[in-house]
Image (cartoon, rainbow, N blue to C red):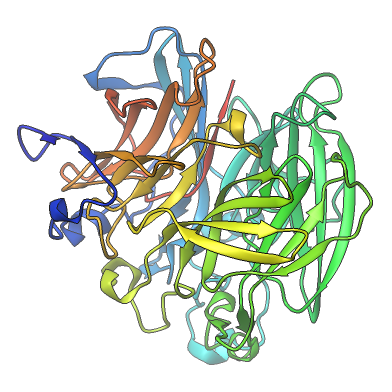
Amino acid sequence: MIFGEDRQSYYFVVTNLQDKKIDKPKSFNKEDWSSAYQNVEKELTNEPLKISKGNNINNLNGTLLRNGPGILERGGQWVHHPFDGDGMITSIKFENGQPFLTNRFVKTKGYLEEEKINKFIYRGVFGTQKNGGILNNALDLKFKNIANTHVVKLGDEILALWEAAGPHAIDPDSLDTIGLTTLKGVLKPNEAFSAHPKKDLNSKASSELLVTFGVQTGPKSTIRLMEFNNTGLNSGELIFDRKDTFNGFAFLHDFAITTNWAIFLQNAIDFNPLPFVMGQRGAAQCLKSNPNKKAKFFIIPRESGLFRGQPPLTIDAPEGFVFHHVNAFEKDSKIVLDSIFYDDFPSVGPDENFRDIDFDKYPEGKLKRSFIDLKKKTCELETLSEQCCEFAVVNPKNLGLTATFSWMASTSQKLGNAPLQAIKKINLTSKEEISWSAGPSGFVSEPIMVPSENSSKEDEGFLFILLWNGERRGSDLVILDANDLKELAVYELPISIPHGLHGSWVN
């Protein structure tokens, strides 16, 4: 069923996963999609948002934090990939339902240096080069910490995260950049700190833990698994810490947790640094899937769990490439892990323009479930959805435990690759699903699920989505009912925000 009156309307779509007859041809306009890629034009402070559709949620209090690239062009030169753009934090604070927006660029050392002369002076991991060709880029192995991937609260600090280096501390109220932090000496200066920490609300060690990791790569790679108390007087204190070393170069963007385990998937890829060293490619462009290798699960006992101090397990993993995991839980002697799988590593080549890519040439992400048998050290894989999707989440109260529902950004069409234009809710057991679509001219980002404080039902709460409205060339905030994906409120934002990455909700 599709409801909508004109092109400016959003649509609510109810579909069955197996019903291919309703699949619609591609209807998006690439210019609508690519128009989001622009520099954020200004910084605002406590700007009240005006509602354009629906009603304020009167008892809503808390803050939505989002991170993503905010600078994509300097002096006429574009980044080669949006992931190379400097981070920009958006805070939307709700006071009795009325939202107020504050946004700030993360004033990293590299940002300040480049802002001063309006010129890129650092190479980007995903292919951005300095002007001057190969000779000016060869042997320059310095990276700019762009702090553009995630934003979370740890203790009294707001942290802007980028996985290849240390976190930047951000003032919780003004969003002004305080600077690189070692988290009270936990980290060495600029030590890698994941951009995908997990908030564990179910540990027996604390009412809330923030679990995260860092990777030191090389011929052998070391994973440092850290667990921080994130509540009460000792909030922000590191209480569990362990290091494990594995063979080979590790490219680990995300991980998953259960009550007792931390699960990492090492994709079957090779890293040849020579083109990067010689100034020909970005470091990420030197990654290539190796069909002759086996992907591996690195399964590390959590120090807060029942198997503290025991050695990690290494188990063969399914074929494919994974950026993001959704959730994991334990069942008997198995770990059940939901992830977004690609057939191959998606990368924008040196001669490609990210604003004009051919979606048909890139692998689509599909929601799949791994059944990892810890006793037999085997794994079986099941496809939960054939529809292209990304940025899938569960109710944060169910993270690490069995979850019935997941919410994710998806394509509007059922098969093939395309921009993410819909929010889908799927029952992970029955595979029944419902979808809300912003098509044909709206493009969605990661949904942030905020559970209802007054209900124990897993799918009671709100979904917050920053959306690019290609019709008016601007950004919207959309709030959906997590249960039925009913549209509750839409706010037109006073700034234009490029397609972003990750965020969190802070009470």
